[in-house]
Length: 462
Ligand SMILES: Cc1cc2nc3c(=O)[nH]c(=O)nc-3n(C[C@H](O)[C@H](O)[C@H](O)COP(=O)(O)OP(=O)(O)OC[C@H]3O[C@@H](n4cnc5c(N)ncnc54)[C@H](O)[C@@H]3O)c2cc1C
Image (cartoon, rainbow, N blue to C red; front, side, top):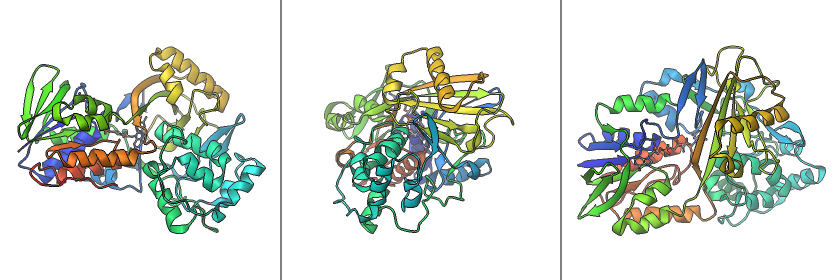
């Protein structure tokens, strides 16, 4: 049997890897439009600085990514984030304030209520959370869910910046059950999110004294690079091969390339973003295309700035700012504080993040004005006046899918349509979770069921 995978990001590479293990007799071809593999994952080394253009870590508690690294022989390359620097900050009223831990219940209500981010009335309202009855488990926005539980101020000052930072969208449009299903589960199970006398877990759900994130010594790019190395023995990898269309041809699929070449295959795995996947499907595959086309994406811009001196004046790994702060920047990671091996000793590496409106308006701009805005805001927010010796701008017009209200229903309709189209699969960060571990789990579940002659190939949520 022959399978063609379209897209050589982590989803496509992982699908090729798991297919080669689960079905070694399967002939696998991977087509990637660009000249490199890895998609959003991209690491560049410049003057001793390890620059990440996309993800810089994976959540430690979701074990799939570390498991794959070990399987590939990268176990000794895994590094954990520095525990002493797990605190992060939120920028409000001209100051950086420690950010309470709110993403993994039970939430420490004492810590939240003591936060200088909240006004006296905001604290009073938040402190009533344990008395608020649970909702009906319906699809509602993060703002509606958290507003109901903790009050509007916690939404505006804590959740808006977090949601913008993680999903690039607004808390009023992002679906709580799609983006943070564990919060809904906890509410349904315990009746509230803050249990008296409990300490909040770290952002990834680990205990405060455990590291939350893992990465690779030489950056996240090591993972796709290693996958490519392993796969070149068993899979046909074609770079610079942009697919133009996919249609059905009898019981098989016909894949047309921009180059004019075409391929016939028993099975096709679409591992691109949803809008690209939508644009490729033709003929009787159009209904699936219409569903995929409904998933929207947010752009982002990442700016890496490397300095030959320490430019951070406190422990921690960075900060976020509310989208209505009047600043273009939404967040900044102190990369050299988060992980070792990110730059020479005594140097520092900042990763500034723009998303949503500020990113859209600057996507077409040259590097120079973008860097100027970022440096000016870093000066205002954290007092950085030093001159960077390395500056690199990465633009991602379709960075992250927006898990808007109705997303779960849309995904279930996409999966239903795919079940009715044996041999056609869609994988990627728009279905079962945006993080790398979710992409890996989804790719593996599709690879395990990737025989088009099997009747069902529904994928399981992570
Ligand atoms: C700024 C940012 C930071 C992130 N940080 C983290 C993090 O810290 N931790 C984490 O776990 N996750 C993070 N994520 C999410 C994670 O990086 C992505 O969800 C994941 O890398 C997506 O991989 P993918 O393979 O599904 O898609 P992509 O990486 O988008 O790959 C799709 C591939 O398809 C190719 N392609 C497109 N069109 C065609 C065509 N017509 N023919 C052939 N090939 C085509 C593209 O060139 C690309 O290589 C982050 C994402 C962003 C944007």
